[in-house]
Length: 296
Image (tube, rainbow, N blue to C red; front, side, top):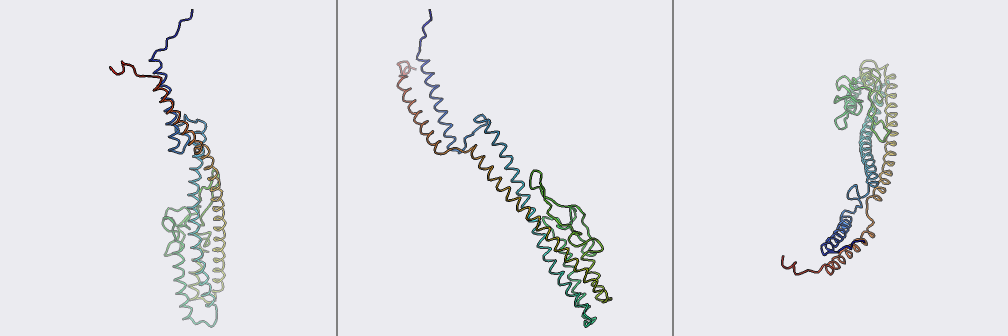
């Protein structure tokens, strides 16, 4: 014969309190979602969603790093391009002076004045060739020195290393132009051509035609360097656009995993509050205080 189970007031109290606690926990969880705007408060809430969110956040962090690298690269290219533009203007002026020196009607005194002006242009161009960005000479390759060219002799002090920025998981882009690429190799560079022209203006005007050709070649190299920098800037710009689009997609995916449905959450909150209040009222009616409760 099966024994009868006796339901005591203690059992009723424990069951009622357990139900109240469950309702309270559910209400507290929904309130947390409303406060934070997030569906996941701890990994155990949604293990699969947490794993996906962590992966997306990692990709977003990488994209942010790539974006910083791209902006840094674009700033480096801008500095190089503006410097080369300034140098190109002065090279054109140098060619004009040499062309005037070739003119047979120019006196030696005039050519000496031209040579003096060319000296100023040469010094100015060397100064521009030593332009730095964040403490690094932009035409010095990967040198650790502060200058790409010796201000006194015009000798190249940099190296042949190239500067690049990582713009993707497997993609990088070069952002620099070395001195020899922009101004010519040692012994046949822009500064040597200017030094030779200065000397010829003063002592050997017959050689000025060769000097003019050398300066024309130097001007062409500057233009070519600027064209290369423009192509690299466009590549960085395209990479920035791609990363921006990818970041938007990843952010939308992360929002879909983590963010709450506000209308649904408000509805759930109202239901949970009503359920909790109803449970309190029902429990108060079921568990009536006894005389012993007042005598404790």
